[in-house]
Amino acid sequence: MTGTLPPPERGREIPPPRAVVERIVALALAEDLGRGDVTTEACVPPGVRGEAHVVARQPLVLAGLGVLREVYRQVDPEVEVHDRARDGDALERGQPVAHLHGRAASILAGERVALNFVQHLSGIATTARRFVEALPPGSRTRITDTRKTTPGLRPLERYAVRCGGAHNHREDLSSAVLIKDNHIAAAGGVRAAIERARRHAPHTSRIECEVEDLEQLREALDAGAEVVLLDNFDDEMLPEAIALARGRALVEVSGGVTLARVPIIAAAGADVISAGALTLGAPAVDLGLDWIGP
Image 1 (cartoon, rainbow, N blue to C red):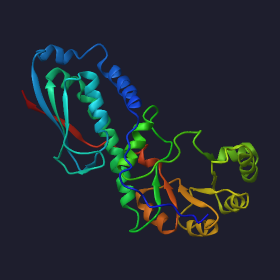
Image 2: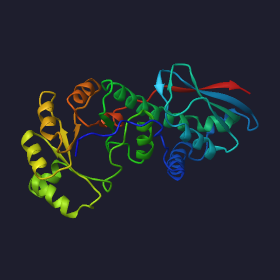
Image 3: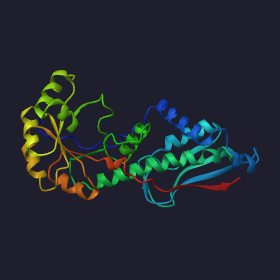
Image 4: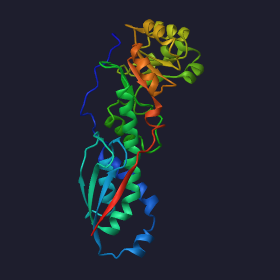
């Protein structure tokens, strides 16, 4: 194993299956609309039609247009949604995202749910793009998310990470073998955990092991780990640790990863940088729905 990965691809922003999006949107609409929109029903005559723009109110990377369309499909299939940008686009303040046309009551009823999704997902895409752009020029280091996602929203959040140009880590606990500190403690040590995993894991699965110091790293490499995760290694320890693993295992660095540390970790030779901040810590961006009129 050489310890290198292929460079990031473009055009990888394949959205989640439609059935998944439908289910998530239906739950959100049930939560927000409940038995109806009493304010709109009281203020807006049922026959009024109108138009509105969804607009970026700050620089951002867009994600979630398909979810916005699904919101209005479920609220009222007659609301027309015309895209003015594409997921993955970098937008400036004031740029339009989508144009809506239809019954005013329907546009207003779906406004908050639609914006909540697009603001949250675009916040993740924007954060992911910043991490990717922090890599040194020509770097082959891969930026990935983690399983630190909002319960129920993982498919959408992972899609937003891809829209930002980063990669996804394992989908769920059944997707890959990743031996962490508590597995090591429960199994009786690094070597015991790796050897047991090798006996029981599918032959198609790599064995990845988290390590917390150089001693554990050496033990994991000697036991045949194919990927090692350097957990909370400081910047001074990284070069020695990565040199030990070079040619023997892929190296993932995680724990305490900030935007400022990305170029340092990449320059040390890490193959993968995984950061929960891409999803768990990403702030929502500012998008608004501006009413144009009838």
